[in-house]
Length: 296
Image (tube, rainbow, N blue to C red; front, top):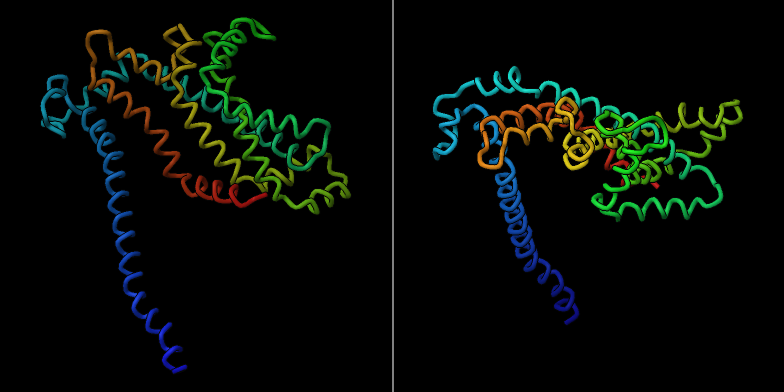
């Protein structure tokens, strides 16, 4: 009787094993199907944008996904007859200015929150976290007042600094760097102090090199965000030669008509730097996010 009782669990496991494998297989197939559908919904508009950039104005309304007679006239027109090259340079300057500032200020602030004790540290950090919940739209008016009446110098309207300054320090970046730098060994910092390294030197020569993965991820996401920014550059610029690329592209559309072949051409050109960055640095993006998730 006892031998029969002992064999029952084995029999039950043998029966449930194939069922469990079939269930796992069904879930995996369903996941692949959903991911494939999601990929298609994201790729199709992207491919349509590129194909439309090679169409003539007369082909836009025809139900052809790909151009019948591909042409490069759209690219020639937007590069020679519009201010798009100037807008390209403006976007690049603003994105680089903001990214370099974020890389320094967010990382050094994150280092301070991670490795130092000072009065009000917890309150200040909670305030930073609280600012993440404030919608950007609520900050536009204070930002504009600061741009018109800045604490230093003249107006910041129609200047590169005026476009970039809302993003030179970010609460999300400080939080990310703080979480990562908590994993920097205190023993290394103490050894540096014994060797006479200054407090800034501890950050610059020890903590920052050990946090390059997180800094790289922060810089890439910040660059992408500033390159695609639209609302704030639209508000703070009025001169045509100070428009950024997303703002300038709206001038290919009017109230009654839109030159979609030109809009798609400009959009395709605007994506080239972003695609280059993602393709080249995708390993660093994934590594930075993964390491940030386990640090601290």
